[in-house]
Image (cartoon, rainbow, N blue to C red):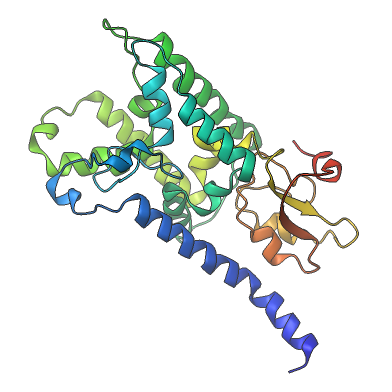
Length: 301
């Protein structure tokens, strides 16, 4: 086999290698975040010291197996406290991760991201989410994560974790349903709110089958916050305009419906690397660092 043939074979196998590497890291992150599966049988929630730290992605605090806290849940818990404290620790962590890697953890480490991708592999006709609906997550984040926990309080002056309580399908899947199955006393308390959230979960899981990462695109507040940092993050996508042949393979491979050539800093990009893996000329690359970013950001949305 000649050097040219070996290089051609490497390029052909690169998408598969990237997919296997990313899937292995996603599974490892899922296992690390949910390292106490024995609690499913007990119907209890782990309350160890690691619950002080946030999970790398959407993973419910109330999941029996969860060893880490949900960053969105932690953010709301502090915002809704009686003294109206602001969660500088959680916001600082989210901003730091976003400034360094953008939405990298969405593509490589998020437990619910893995669940969505597995559902999307079911053999059905696939669709794209209309572009205007991708802005819904920013509204949900502003209203349910930041405003309602502060403005809507009980008689003790404590705000409810509104997104977790009224909308989050991750909590219903990972926390609500397993705890109800294991605890008869909780089943007796089931009411309209649970059935509302069960309906949202059903819609979300069904949507993930037909639309890749349906929840990420439509409603994820963590993705919304991290996505805002994509344009300035140190880990970023670069396009070599002189090497690009505008074949469209990168846009076709993107699970988030982004055209990487036109918008390499898009808020929707999850840094999964699928575009880079299918590029026939090597025009796309990820780089860590800051510098002259004019070429990357002129066409960003």
